[in-house]
Length: 326
Image 1 (cartoon, rainbow, N blue to C red):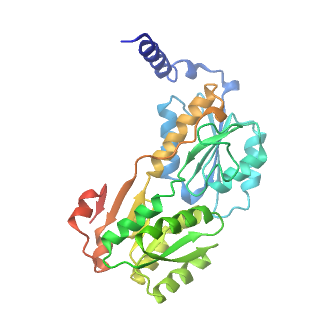
Image 2 (image 1 turned 60 degrees about the horizontal axis):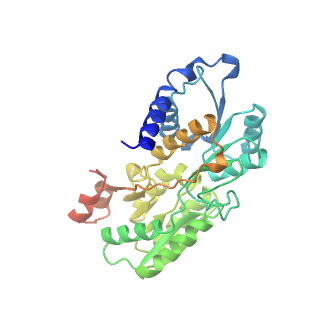
Image 3 (image 1 turned 45 degrees about the vertical axis):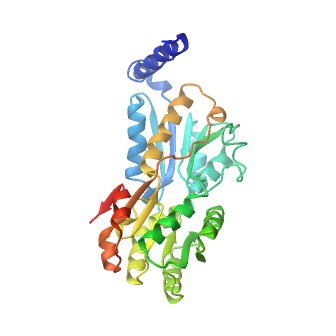
C-alpha cells in the first residue's frame, strides 16, 4: 500500500469513528442548528431520507444537533418569513429543498452556509454559483441540470407508444423555463413536435391536459416543480381519463397512475444532502464543495396504466425497468 493510500485509510477510519464518539460529547449549549425549509406535501419520504443521512453521519436530533424544520403548507406566502427565522436562530447550515426556498434563503443571508436541492434551475445561469466545480460564496448543493434528460424521456415514451409524432409538455412557467427549453432542444433530433403547456397554478392543470387531448397529441411529458409534484395524482388521473400516455421525472408518478418515469431517485438526493451538512459542520467551506448532479437514473413502468390505455409495452423495455408496477 502506498503511503498516501495508507494515510487516507487512517483519516477515513478516524472520520467514521468521529460521529459516534466525539460528536455525541458536545455540550448542550453548543449544539449546531441545522435549518431545513421545504414544502409540506413534498416531504415525508424525502425528509426521512435526509434524517437517515444525518443519522448515518452520526447526528441525532436533540443529542448532538438541533434540526429546525420549516414546512410551507401549500403556499409560498411565508417562505421569506421562514428564511429569516432560520437566519435569526443562527443556524450553522440551512438546507433549502426547492428553488423558491433557495432564493429566499440566499436573500436572507450571505454568510450562513446554504445547501440547495433543485431539479429545475441551472445554478450558474441563476447567478447562485461561479461554477459547478467551484461554487464560491456560501452556497452549494445538488442540482439536476442535465439538458439531455428530456431527450431520453421522449425516446422512452416513443418506445412505449407506437407512431409518436406530437407530444405535449406540461411545465411550471414560474420556474421551469430552462427545463422546458432544454426539453424542446432535446426533442429536435427525434423529429417529434412539442406542444407547450405552461401552468402557473393548480387551476391551470385541468385545462392544459384537456387542451392537449383536444389537439390529439400522442403523449404527455411532465416536467418537474413542487407544484407538479404536489399535483402528481391529479395529473396522472386526468391523463388517464383523456387517454394520454405520460412520462415524468418523479419515480413516484407511476405509483399514482402515470405510465412511466425516468429520473433520479429523489430520496437518495435528499439523503446525499446530509453528507454536505456533515462536511460543512466539520469545517469545510461550502464554496469549495462542488455542485453535484445525479449519475444514476431509474426507469419505472406502470403496466396497469399501460393496459388501461391499450398499450402493449415491449418485453425489452420492461426488462430495462428498475421497477414494474403490475
